[in-house]
Image (tube, rainbow, N blue to C red):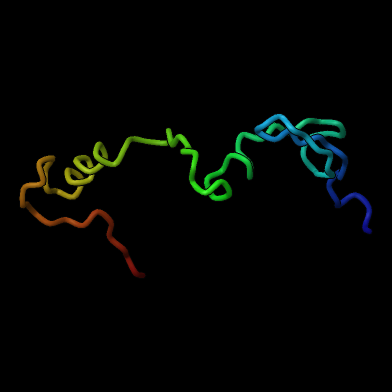
Length: 93
């Protein structure tokens, strides 16, 4: 291995959402650090069959977004027929 180009690979502790933990090797943090997971295979709907619901607080719900999108498109907040202006235009050079 070439010297000085590889990241430090060391042992850390990973703590799952249910509190169980295991040791693994990683480039995360420093040797002996703890990585606490917010979501894992025990809590993610893809592995649990969709029994739990994830909170998506990343933006407004869709009903709040649609009137704003109509206003940008030139149709007004009520969706009245006006100048049909596209939301996005592509320029090819």
